Image (cartoon, rainbow, N blue to C red; front, side, top):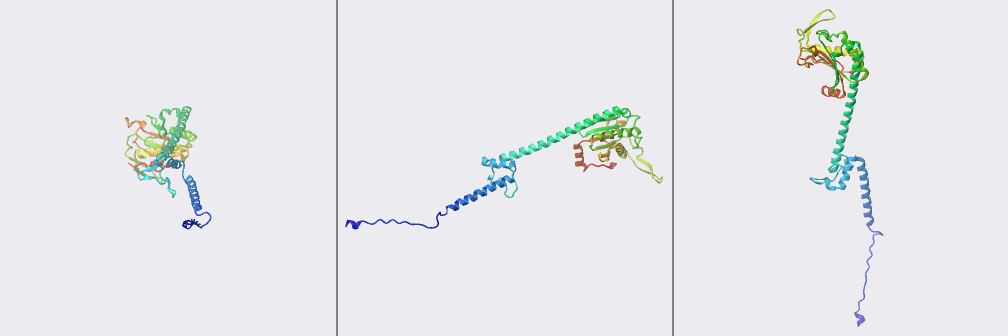
Length: 309
């Protein structure tokens, strides 16, 4: 009866179908695709960013907390549409440093150019003084030729002297010796520099006669018109311009011709002094020319009417 009480032990084995490897290969393939996408994204980022932006991205991975802002950690250093965001943290510092270095470089270049220009104008000044000493005609008038290098360029002033004016009284007609002076100046300036030239006419405060001028037309008719120191200073500046061109200066080198009447006196304490009657010629530097272009709309080569009272 003991044998009847023994129960047989039954072992059940369940074999599942569905292929040799199951679904593990799908996970591996997904990881591979993800890695390739990340690799190509990295290549794209390297292609569209500059050194500063790459520095910012690198800094983000080294110190993620550096890009955390008021709204939490930034999710993107670069917009996927191709537009760039401003770098944060060290990246922003690098960007500002780069901009500052670029500005410093521009300033240094400008300073170098100004220094070179000043050397050229200084040399021109020496050359003009040498020519004056060598010329018998000019040497007699050296006390009426005032020359100096200024922030605007090299200024040459031809002034009147008692009993030795540069122009006929109340006229734009040049004295013979004034023609010689202007032609010699033109020859030296045009030979040594190509800088634009500014010519300005000045008078003293003496009123111009009755404020009218009479002139005869081709038909012999005598006409009268209003005339003042404004017209006189402008006409004298243009007379000087024409003589400089006759002396060999290219017409294109003349940058500005104006008449200022008696508004800018050389000797303010003695407004009637002959020294106030003068022609001022400035060999302008680059910054002065640029300033005229900016403030007055460009460099002119013809006479501008400055006779408005």
